[in-house]
Length: 354
Image (cartoon, rainbow, N blue to C red; front, side, top):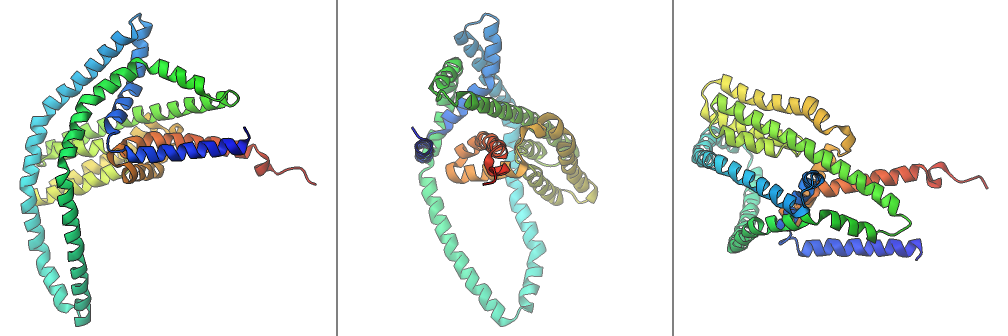
């Protein structure tokens, strides 16, 4: 088969795979979650297997321990976080009323100073906005009508994910060996080298970024709780968990935390302390945690990660968000490989003079 036909074959295969993923995106979540669990627990299974445990027994012990720890953590945190969520929702009407009382006089004065033609433009824009709001509400009702599917997806995530994780973790080495046998013979060493680089990149990023998120969640949660911020633990843990999105997590936490502090406290000192907690966390992440735990060797630029998360979410929803970082790692490795080959090729150096 010529190189042109091989290229056409792989392009068509990639396109069909993307179409299939798009069509099945609604049911992929438990399978993606189970695959992620199996991938990251495979080194533990290999370690137990080296100590003369069968793969099935090692898989059973690992998954039981993993899901029991997750259930225990949720059992301990859920009552506390539930109370903080209720408190936060009770605060929202007061926050809205405070904003209205503070901004309404300014808005009225601004409207009074506007010329008549500008007011006419504002009225037209308001009519257009009202039409868009009606369309949005209609779509919301349609989504609520499908809420039964959301419950089904949650149920499938709880039930199917452990099953998928068990079988993938038990058969992980067999699956990788089978895929290795399917590789085309001539470029097989190059493909294996790229898979090893992808595995190294992905494992280093997720391992390091998970530790960073955990440290930041503890820092924000404990700090905001000590200050006395209402729903501080909820805001802190949430900010830490979304800190895998560079800068977005800290910015979101800063806005929410300072907003609650402005409504709760009558003095400036605790408000400033809340802001300093988030600025300290961002500084610690940028200059200490990420360089030491993730490092530049991973090769995933923050802008590339943000783009991948947004693109994955837009294309495949929450499943796309879960797949975004692995796909970004794969694409990053392949791009670096392609650039290295280009720099060694005639296209870069130029052919002999004719």
